[in-house]
Image (cartoon, rainbow, N blue to C red; front, side):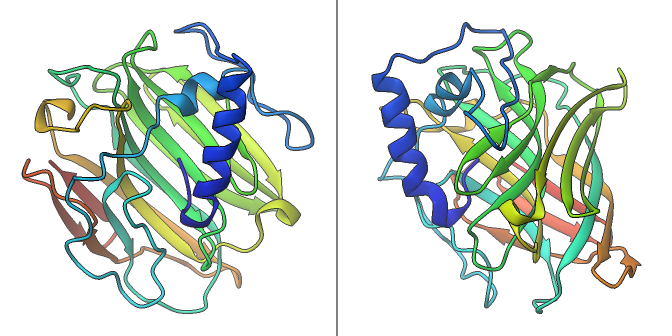
Length: 275
């Protein structure tokens, strides 16, 4: 789950970890990691599954709004909803809900598919994410995690979820500490991760994103998406640094198009990610 300006650092970290042979067993969530210590135990296995997309695939099909976080073909952001008003505002709270797709992808060849909400600073140097992910190396393949990706990458233990489960994500700042909580409302289980403000800094960009990655050599196709769509994020809520709470009106934006009916639709407080 890479923000734009830390992607090259991730490649170097992953290469070093893989050379060291670090790889966790499939289906066994590792430790969440300590922001003052080493990455989590299953870091190498998880990141190694997040290969950058094939260089021949379509790239940006629409220019982002001025000041939007850059995402050339290095990361697998496919489409997103982003706060409509581009300003210098920063936020202390972002939350929303969505549901686990009712089916898994018909073709499972090592791809990962993520549906997430989060916050980024204006320079794209960091991202705080509440994530629903699909990875058939896991049992169950659908799971939630909380991620904090800045100069280093940290993630909570994975929590398995079932098709149709309702997911809630919250990113909040309290007493100088950012907390990311991703909850399976249906089961009551949560994945939580924290970081001090000194690590992450102020957050400017609220966003809802569909992100995909493939194993090296595999092109991403329509059958790699879950068969049921779209995924709708609703009950979106924001609080800014002067404690003003409001319902965000996001702008739809498409990064890549695989010809699978990708489309973003927005309304106040909601983003629909179709494919």
